[in-house]
Image (tube, rainbow, N blue to C red):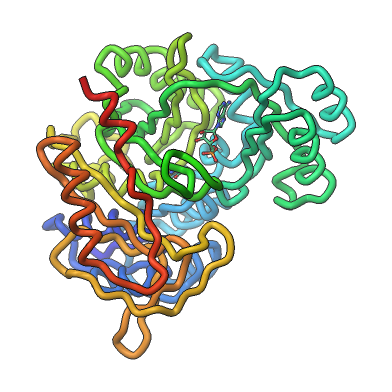
Length: 419
Ligand code: AMP
Ligand code: GLY
């Protein structure tokens, strides 16, 4: 089969790497892919948001199946457009992708269907939000309604910080239209767990759980980033908690989306916080997480393409979804300065026989050069989490590029959760 994967980061590299193991795959195109992905797929320089060009490419290249990985094209309706021309897809349609595309939609969904989440208020103008913040409990969490490159969430430790966040989103429009509405949310505490799940809108099959490390510096200090590393499974996510999440969160969400006429098909990501009052939803994503995918898929023992095709056919109950009982750790190597200013264009040398998922790199005269904030993710799997972490850091030593920066404590907090 000819497969097209829309997207070009570390997550897409991990998806492509797994799809390549399927005997059904003849050829994989990545739109746009990147310099590292080029070793595993044919990269086509089409932007993931250019829906016209994506559809045109699919028409002309006998694409049998498409995987739309990033949030933007999903929320823009890429799957709807591809299905219109008869290309089966993995990913939700536009109506269902709103679960990530609008925080106001997802918060209201959870409220209306009694799915546990942080308490919240929605504001459509800055003055009412500012008035509310005069007396709201602090810390508080301010969220832009729409997509904001993962930067639309501000945890405000003081009233002034909260007000500043409101003004920057609603008056200065730092996230454009995404800040037309905002959610002001109760601040929750507890270990965070990411649960990616396969669903065809009827059956939901959670993948192995994982933990992201969002802050730039060790000990969860520094600015929020797209994710500096992940481990799986997440030791805080016990079998009892998993059962509770299935009953109170996963199935009710699938059911709620069906009742709203927005049946969800694809990967539904549950960002959870395990609070003293039970697990609560922090966010939904309508896609695989990045860099969660880089630890979850290496543990998948079943054929990913087979699962995706079954989901697209509405027969997920017929698919085998099996994960290994081992652990995985992914250490993200970034350009020093990320998530702010950084230099790029440095040559990368790395082993070719390892699970190294390239996020930000380009090929130039046969050389792989850094071309982004997050450059690559080094993943290792092992029977235990401790071994996976040690192996990943060992492999990190064999990757070289100027200005490389990585956290040295990926997985350390999780190790404390191991009984
Ligand atoms: P997001 O960009 O939506 O992934 O959110 C970024 C991070 O903000 C999450 O991973 C949490 O650590 C934090 N966060 C979001 N909502 C809350 C909340 N209600 N209480 C505490 N932390 C939160
Ligand atoms: N790692 C979090 C996300 O993909 O949104």
